[in-house]
Image (cartoon, rainbow, N blue to C red; front, side, top):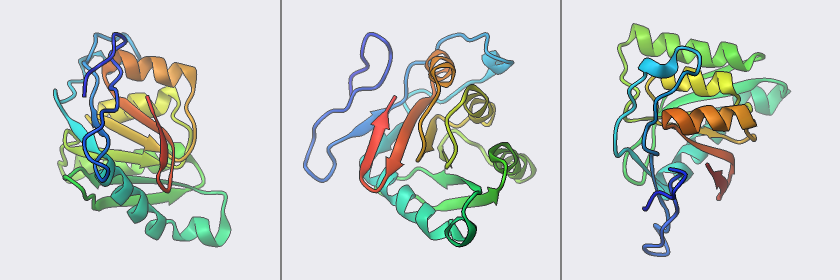
Length: 173
């Protein structure tokens, strides 16, 4: 994939089964909420097959949401070629609580985020982007949309955001 002049990864055609590989943006210095010391891995990639595998796994884990609704789910997942396994999944009425629970789990278990994907059902706001950056995770995925400020911070610090990710549809930022 070739980055555009704005640094956002562009989709490239390869084969029908593996039509997109996402390459993380080039990091830029940031003054966003303490995230300037974050070092995201250079050259991290996420394949379409891996993204689809993650979305399938997340559907299996959303048990409280399926029964009651009105909760947010967050997942920390592996990023392996064509597959993804969920390492941690948390549901909570507050999206920040779910994110913080996974961040705490990563800290307690000394899990490195450099080769991981973070999924949330909530909007990709500036706070969510900063938390993902502090966890060292280069890819942030949501079934919801994103905010302008979230996008701007992600662009500055080099996080690739994927919004409106459901089934086989997504928006790449």
